[in-house]
Amino acid sequence: MSEVSYFATRNAIIQLVNQSSVLISMVLMLVVFVVAFQMKSHNKRIRYFLVTTSINLGGLMFQISSYISYAYILYSLVIPGFTLYFIETERNEKDDWDGNFWMILQTLSAVMIILMVAFSGSSFLIGISFLLQYVIVIIMLLISSKQLSASIGFLIGTSFPIFTSLAGMLFFGLYTHGFGITMMLLIVFFGYQSDMEQELLERQIELSENKVSLLMEQIHPHFIYNALQQIALLSDEDATKVKPAIQSFSSYLRKNFEALTNEKMIPFEIEMEHVDAYVELSQILPSRNFTIKKDFKITNFNIPALTIQPLVENAIYYGIGMSEEGDEIRIETKEEGGYVMIIVSDDGHGKKTELPTQKKHKSVGTKNVKTRLNILCDGELSIEKGENGTSSIIKIPADKAISKES
Image: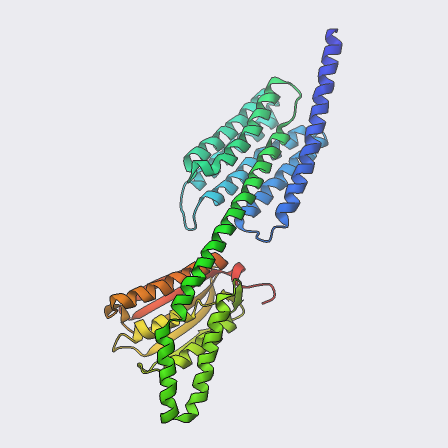
């Protein structure tokens, strides 16, 4: 075979590999993008992935149109997007770790690649620049992963663009860089899906366990016994109050049992109906007099069932109920900083007089509320105690609490 025919055959094979790889990559990326876009939960993590996929698709489109330089510019931006995805995957909420450092480093590497494409044009130097970008990714994975075993998919995925970059440096005219990035994103996506399924399974198990604990906590015999005893006494003291008391008691039980079978968010007004039934029932029991004040700046939102009532119960019995001071419980709602906030506060000093058994009872109820908030809506509960009483603050991301229909 002559040298001319050898190079002609070589170039034909390289051209065939280039066209085949980019066509396969576009099909795979379109499928992944459509599947990811149709996912119900478009959290920050999946949004970063969609942006990264879109950038890679743009690079593939330029490559299929033979605009290789523009394709490389877009490929250089994939890794900064991937870095954002990794940061969101690894960090816990409120974490302040080295994500900004990695983003700055990857942005600088992307700028270096763009400068190489614009002013050098050397495939070898461009390949070296891409390799540097991927080495930074690997270092980031090794240093910043919470569990290295959990990031094995990231590491395997990164090996593909490294391999295609090396191939492009060894074989002039071979442009399979987009294929390598596509395979990386494909592996990451399937890893994401696997993580999501495992997380969903764990949440379902935790929610099932929480139901049992919730049942024991909410339908406790002592409260039911006292309520029935007091209703019996009312029949002798004031018969006109018996029927409303029974209705409140019935509503209280019904709402509890409904909540135990409800794994979805419910309207705030429905939860408040349960709270009102509990308050009415509590007011017929032999306890200190108290008043409920409401300040609702927002009501058109959803909340997990049995999250406000346990906090009101704590305020009644362990806030003002265990103290000689205070007689007011306040329930407030507002939207602030991207969150829907529900605040239950009292003006008592219950923290000074709680017995160990009462503290345990209250902590179990608080734990149940935290679990339901976390599982059902990524919400959180914080307790603030002071000399002027206790405040329980629920924070739910507004995009989870306020539905489009609200």
